[in-house]
Image 1 (cartoon, rainbow, N blue to C red):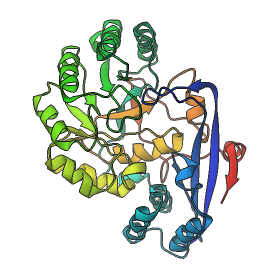
Image 2: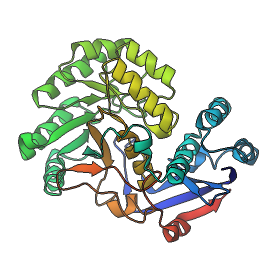
Image 3: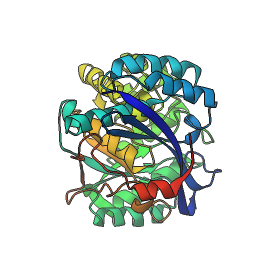
Image 4: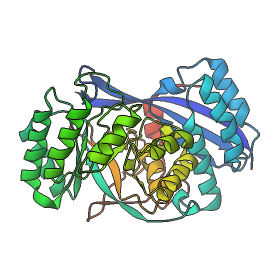
Length: 378
């Protein structure tokens, strides 16, 4: 099998209402952009994957796109490591095109007639979903939302701690805990790894928050300090009463080895779309297993195809106990998130996400929706 062509499509997903994300409250988004990468082969198999923003791929010089295509056309898509050697080099001088690697795995799975997670070890066929919120709301609103999520079948929720006063964040978590009781797991994300806007937490704030959140039964505290403060994170992980999680912004197994050797995190959170692809994420999870760290993937991507790819990796990791499932109705609904898919990805009756069982990434695209949302091609 040989690769015959590569296409890059710029996608815009419209929103009914603007979103103001907790980590950048001054920003307002009325649409979400994606870059859809499609790799064609001489056997008629097409591999698909998405980047978070078209600027990662579409915004670079056309000569760079031509270079990426030239590295792929004529190669065997099964030669993932050979192709990745070239893509890793390209990442030092341009965008990080990890979605290309993910599209290769979509081809491999389709050629083998198997979902990717089974080719990578087949550790589990479902994983517990936690509904990951996007915005900062009042304590009453979050409590009401959490009850709604519970009624919909979710048994875990992640709240954003990015208010001007950490005590206000604690009020929100306490209100949600009072509303849902012990039947729902709660995670808290401070979004301090690379803070775009204040507040900026100190070590003492992070430690105080960790102790207070522990009393509220929180499962983990995510990104409580800047991502390069490995010493501070290690101190915090040692002194905190709950696990410290992070790593979503990092790429490469060597960087994750540094973080784990420093004991910066109890739970590492690679994202295949940001850390170097599906195989790199699997390597990181094996390293975490060897170092007695839990690996729970970050899944911040806003498209259903992103979700499907990460689910395949989660299905291959024995100790991946949770899976991030972003929704924020009514501004970010299931229909918007999975608009490019023929069928949406939904939880089962017990609040778990089944790993998609189709070949490759396990899902089919809605070609009419793809055409409707495409704004340009390269």
